[in-house]
Every structure is written in structure tokens, then in C-alpha cells.
Image (cartoon, rainbow, N blue to C red):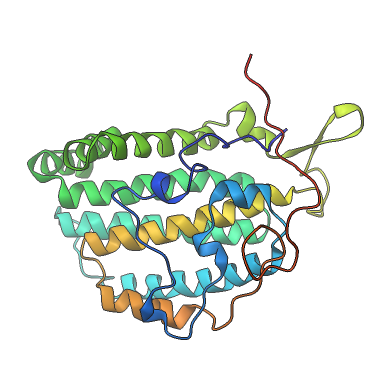
Length: 294
């Protein structure tokens, strides 16, 4: 029922190209990490995470690391608390407020996925993208963005297409289309399309739908959507840091310090898949069952 939800989307096609607004932020295994080896989830593609969802040890390691990264980021942004007045209508204030809001969306989504509360978490993914992209637009978008900033301070809604238009003009049609696909994919969770809602159901006897939330325990929650969500949160955290650097909210040296303080020294090994160093060489069954288009 749910395996093909995002199988052909910008998110699933490779994570990075669909997630990053202007080029990839890069692998986490750079030289600055020294002896630290992050959870493999940080570089995991979302479609692969959905198809091989049983990497519980790696997901737990990622959650620990992500919490530390997000805590350090939140502490960093808190340094500018009580800096801006209520009458201030500057770019600096808007960028800071929007990115604090996006950071909180990532914190909340990680907490909810840890608790297997994927329905609420999935609604936050687009929030994180929208607020970050708006901060980048206000910072980088020139005179048109300045006009939209005044409208934003007057409580008008600035549509996400403004940022997509900026990306198209300055970074090309392909990146703009990737961003449009990402936004469209995440909007399906916000607007609760049939397939988005279907992530809350499993198939019982005679292919009858069984809702995963009617009992107190979370044993009916499919591991696929949880695994997928961790991989997506990983990409969104890296995207947050990328945009924070580009908008001068944080410098490269501080980012490197945060990674060093957050990532564990040993990578929890994988159980499934086809890469080196894995304990099992593949999933026991094939679970991808997307419907054929008529």
C-alpha cells in the first residue's frame, strides 16, 4: 500500500539533488572529522531507506548524533536572543527568526519520529523547507526580495514560488525544477493526499486496511516510513546548515566544531544492503510494490 508513496519523486531520486536548493552540501566524511565516523543515515538516500528499513542500530545512532547537532545549533542561535526590537524590520531579524522557526521544526520532527508519531512529523518537513528557503530568499534575493520582506513584516504571505523563481534565474532551470518537485512532494503530506494518509495503514487479512494508531502500542507502525523519515531529516539538517552558512548565520569553523562534537567515533555497522562491511547482504524479501499506472 505505501511502498511507492515517493518512489518517483525528487526526494527519492537521490536525496541530495532533490533536497539541496543550490548544490549539495557534501558528504559528512570529510577530513575535518578526524577519527569521527558518523551514522550512515546522514548520507542515506530516502528511497533506499524506505526499501531497507530494518537498520535500527544505525537509526538510533543517527538520532543521538542529530540531537546533539540540533542542540548545538539551537544554543548558537540563542546567542542572538534579545537582540532585535519588535519594531525592527531588518533582513537580519527576518533571517534569524525564520531559521529559528525552521530549526524548531527539525527538532520537533526528530522527536516525533523517535516516538513513531510520523503523521505530525510529516507535516513539519515542508515547514522546515519553506522557512529556510524564505530566509535564503530575503538574504540573497536583491531588490525584489526587499519589497517582499516589507510585505512579510506587514503579515502578508510570501509564496514559495518567489524563491523558486530566484533559483531559476540565478542557478538554472534544473535546480528550480528539483526544488519544485521537492516542495510538491512534501505538500502531499501537508494536504493529506490518499497515499500520504496511507502511510498510517497496513494490509490485514483479505487486503483490508488496518490503521496503525488504534492501539496504545506502536507495534503496527511500519518501519519503512520511520526509516524514510530519518533519512529525510538527515538531509534537511544538512540543508539547514548549508543555508545557514550561505546566509552568514554561522561560519564554517563553527559548523566543523559542531560536527566533531556530535558525531560518534564508531559507525554502527549495517545489516542489509549491498555495500562493504555489512552483516547481511540483502533484505530477506522484496517489499517494493508500487502500482502500475493505467
